[in-house]
Image 1 (cartoon, rainbow, N blue to C red):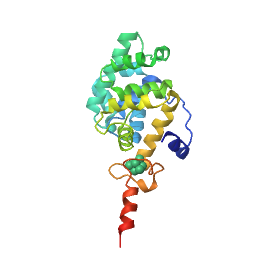
Image 2 (tube, helix red, strand yellow):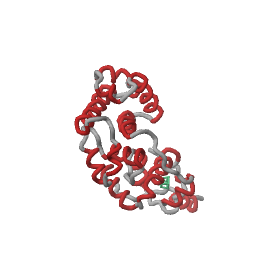
Image 3 (spheres, rainbow, N blue to C red):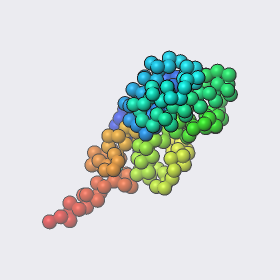
Length: 220
Ligand code: SF4
């Protein structure tokens, strides 16, 4: 499955997307909204507050106004401020570069101890900013992995993350993550997957192609 998706969507080379704090804030902003909205909101936040120190000492209402277009701003604004303030308190500055020198699980645990930081947010920071083999499980990754039978159908996103990471070599994690998201957006859509156009339709346990072919065979 890994090889077929990689060959179909092309090789991905990891490059850092943004600094670790930026990745953390972006992930909070992207909750329950589209990527396009999250990008717009992130830019709006940066225009209003040029540094993370500015955001950390800002009034939550002003931050909420700056990120209003992304939705749930009254929840996201205090969450972002709390995260930044905790990092400042713990580390004495707003800098997460120290995580790079930590073993993966230690770095993950450190991030997860921050207020409001769940498994997906921690994995986004570790994968996208540091290139560490942590696999964020968003709605697309979760859905496609379940349909492919890679994780238990009832597994939570957190459990699915553990199971998927255990199936992959560290150097495969970034490619697989991006491929599953692309596949979920373009082909294995919710609620109706386009199995007829899927490169995995002969090995996927949820494929509807075999069923459709059988129906065509018995049709008069
Ligand atoms: S065969 Fe269908 S259900 Fe399976 S991964 Fe492809 S699109 Fe999704």
